[in-house]
Length: 379
Image 1 (cartoon, rainbow, N blue to C red):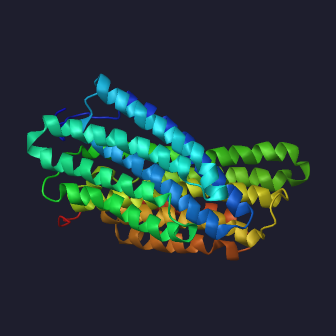
Image 2 (cartoon, rainbow, N blue to C red; image 1 turned 135 degrees about the vertical axis):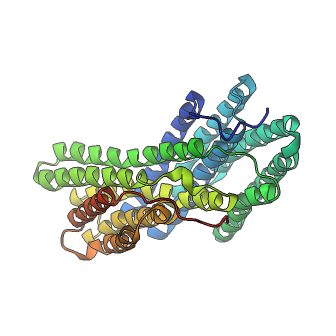
Image 3 (spheres, rainbow, N blue to C red; image 1 turned 135 degrees about the horizontal axis):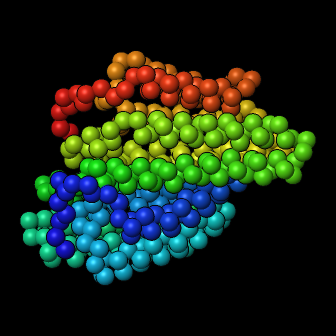
């Protein structure tokens, strides 16, 4: 298992990687649905906390596989089998999401997560045998992941009041593993390949919003009295989702990971970008529940479940990819636009205004194309 050439021309996502992503469609959909139910019931603290914890496991498992694949994707039979094991772990994790939300029982979710991570340890150990110059880094990955899994087993035995702070600590241990493993020797990554993979996952999470838009139309067919507002929600959701897609793919992402430090910033900030995109769909479902009388939330509160994820998405992608390739106008308009979107619920027509702001941001990007990359010091 030798490292891949980071300068390989025309490197793109493999069929196995696309197949691998399918199980994350399931996991993200279930997490988003559980967040929707929690928000619709007004259980904001528990819902957001549980969602943040579950989505971390989904995102981190996907990201670890993606960065490993960009370096060591041999696509032989053993690599494929270990990838299938990881996919099985994702499905077990997804099956444990409902109980994690409703009962605070993380047993099944942790078991699924550990299955994924054990397969990842096997991949790194295999890489260490065939990559002598990077043997220290690959073995450090295996060691760090193994230690982290012991911590997650201990997590199951902690009292409920200690689980959130313990989760924060253990998550920090997880995200420190790449720093521990690669601070002296960096495994190679292919900028175009890795950013394509992030783009594909972005499409997955934005797809949840399109599903929410379709649900609005389905609900409209059964709620004749609410036909107009529901159809409006569906149309506006499509506009916002398309705008988020346009905004995400505007900058040259491959230029955002020119150093190890910048790649960490890019990869880690995507947790908020991905989580916000999936949470946006949950907010749309909450809006539908309010309009159809299935939730007792006020319209103001329901609107915030939509606008907060959009604002987080905008700020996140601006910070890691747009900012360094935009002129002064774009870099002024984007933070202001995100702030206005965040406050949209205080306006009588929040969703309509949000869609209008998103269109304005897209128009600004169309007339202000990316500028030449600035001279950015290596992080």
